[in-house]
Length: 108
Figure 1: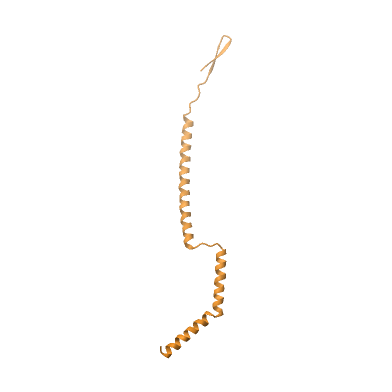
Figure 2: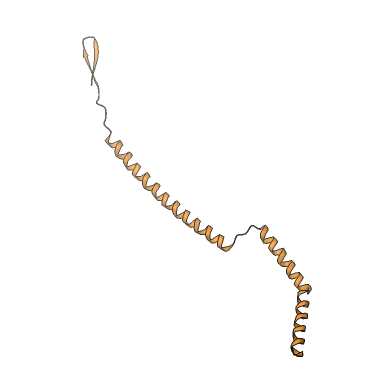
């Protein structure tokens, strides 16, 4: 190796050692560790997990809307059937009492 290249590599290596042992690097590692610990305690989810849950929620909301519409349709059909069946009910014929001698008879 040439002397300037060897000097540059040695200087670069020593600078890397200084940077790695720099207190700022330790502080950065500590801050990252504290931040990761705090985030883990918050029980957060990833964006992908959130997207999956959001899609499931949208599907469920659509299904609920579909079922509500179906219930409303069935209830309106039930009301129509109930109202038409009450108008079709036949009334009982009235009974009349006929007096004959001493007893009363009922005719239907």
